[in-house]
Image 1: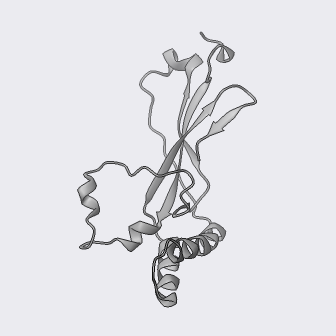
Image 2 (image 1 turned 90 degrees about the vertical axis):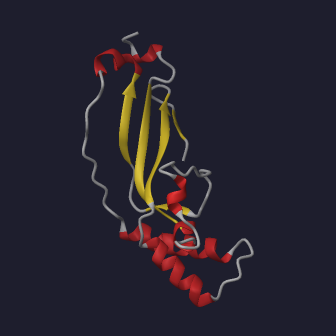
Image 3 (image 1 turned 180 degrees about the horizontal axis):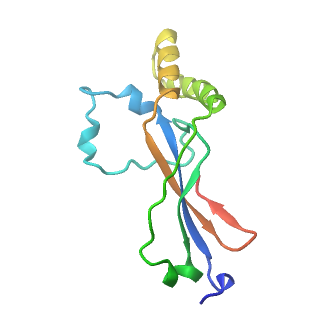
Length: 142
């Protein structure tokens, strides 16, 4: 059991990054009360272009099954994210496409304002799993 090659997957990681979400800026109180979610996480399809990352992801959790007995209860770690201005600029265009599609009748000025506001806002921290099967194979869900 101490040999990582005897486990499939050999490790599981949780990755995270600050993210912006189109509907977070579109549906604001009082029209929509996000507090009704009562702390429950919002789950997204990994292909949802309305959710965009603001920085490169960081490893939030890293569990090696070969070392799980020694890992104990784990510890805390400090994670720092650096917002990437280039990514924010790319997100402006992606959000513009999202706000303009799906039959949403919006004025061009409103789409212009919403895409910039959304690209420059933080809706929360997006998190997703990564399975590391062995030294060569990783499965990323995002």
